[in-house]
Image (tube, rainbow, N blue to C red; front, top):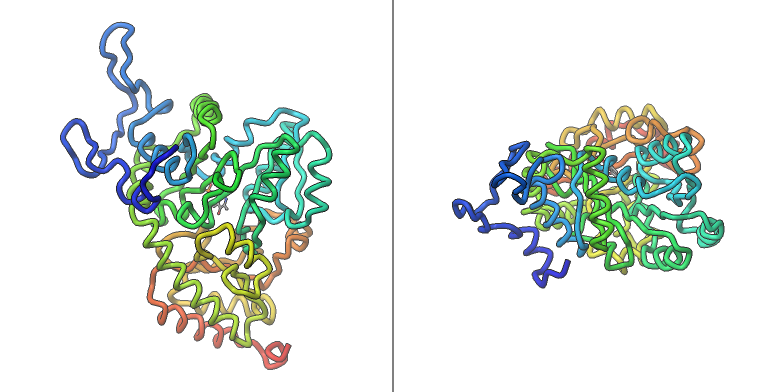
Amino acid sequence: MTDTRSPRTIAAANGIGQDAAFGAVAPPIYLASSYKFGGFEQPGAYDYSRTRNPTRDQLADTLARLEGGAGAVVVASGMAAIDLVLSRLEPGECVVAPHDCYGGTQRLLNVRAAKGQFEVVFIDQNDAAAVDTAFATGRQKLVLIETPSNPLMRVVDIAVIARKAKAAGAAVAVDNTFLSPALQQPIALGADFVIHSTTKYLNGHSDIIGGAVIAAEAEDAATLAAWANVTGVTGSPFDAYQTLRGIRTLFPRVESQQRNAEAVAAFLEAQPQVKTVHYPGLPSHPGHEIARKQQRGFGAMLSFELNGGLEEVRRFVNAVRIFTLAESLGGIESLVAHPATMTHASMDPQARRTAGITDTLLRLSVGLESEGDLLEDLAQALKSAGIGAEALAR
Ligand SMILES: *Cc1c(COP(=O)(O)O)cnc(C)c1O
């Protein structure tokens, strides 16, 4: 969708002051499930809210403009958004997915593949030979990309994979949940679809579950919208209203949280209790250069490995006061998660190890609190973790 306004303006102002009924400045919410016909055989613009709803359409229009797509479909969760894209596949066709993708995505792909609905291969998308091998089968129809990845923050070059996928006849879908369109716009880099768990940065206030797919082509958007109506996965108007309200402050939120995350990453990197920090903004990060090229910022998510073992992890997460031990990410509050027992617990332990998710890996979603308070909280929790002199010397 060509919109000459900057994404910052679109986020703050799309749909503002457009209410035809009463001139409401904020777009009103339409909770109605059904809409009156003008007369016999005269349906209006809307008839039934599973199919279309004005509030959900307002959010879809804003998301399409923010991502530079032709259209968007708003659904009930991030998982529903991924499943909606997977609905394009026929039995025998293959999905090429990252080996370190979101745990729920991995589970969905495996369950559907086990039912014979499509095939799936999990590869390291930074391994050029593995990518070429996956594309050589001729059956690949869809490449799923998640960058930066969860929870190790690995970065893959979207433009490079998209070029190879196009040459092999496969569509490209990028899960852009970790950065949001404020920091990365995959369609401009060659993606056909962008997926969001709007639960995260787009809504940003940790009070709804939602998802969306943005399509580069209008025809693809229409196909997905029709399928979402068939299966009934479309999102609720209330959640769409909340999400649109959250998007108004997307840019300032993400920018402030990112500043805090940069400070947290630098702090952790200097602590003897910390073995490694995974943050694309650190020059030591293997994906730093690609991130600089394809992202507008490094985001507010990071992970790190603690020295020691599970006991030290337990003491650390029990000691934090400002960071809350919880799943999810992208809200205004700082969270800490232990992927091995939380977000990635459904993953087979072997697959987890292959993906590099160790038992002492912790993931942080850095929020809007003051930088000083966040660093102080981490410092006292690292002290409370009681990591022995032997581990500190490693
Ligand atoms: C949370 C998340 C999902 C799933 O979204 P839900 O809204 O929880 O269904 C998918 N991908 C990524 C990267 C996520 O962080």
